[in-house]
Image (cartoon, rainbow, N blue to C red; front, side, top):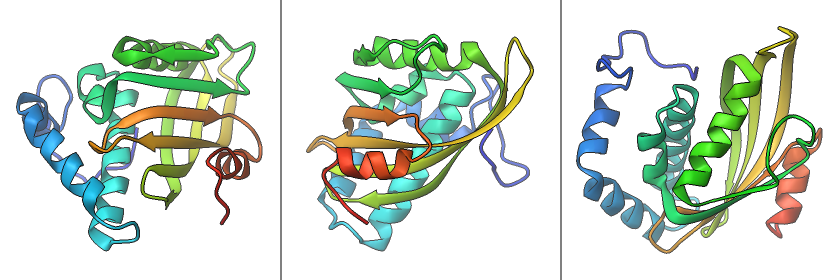
Length: 183
């Protein structure tokens, strides 16, 4: 799981209390996302919020908390994968149900998984992130470590409307290229 400070209080569901509160009042999440979307790229508050949001979403994915995970995604989100052929993934997923299925497909194949955000480039309506996944194959128990890139296309409401996941050795470079950006 993602690293958290020791002593984070959790609910019976395994969610941190802050996540539980946000899940119960989703209009606050919508309001925060819309406000952050209006901040200029590079703003320290925007940068901190994007990193915090990505880490919260990844933590939710690791604990298979699909209800919390979907708060940051548009209902008609499209998710496209490039590179994980033969590992049990579809080429694309659609909507909140597709987000759930893509997360299930990922964790069906891997055990003891830890996902971290290494860096993020904020281009207002696109965020390019380099991620690192550490874990082991569920069946084989073979350990693995991989870096990959992803492009989050963000709606005017501040929610993810599309996500391109690029599983490749040079995933960061491919993600930058897919987003039409450079370092």
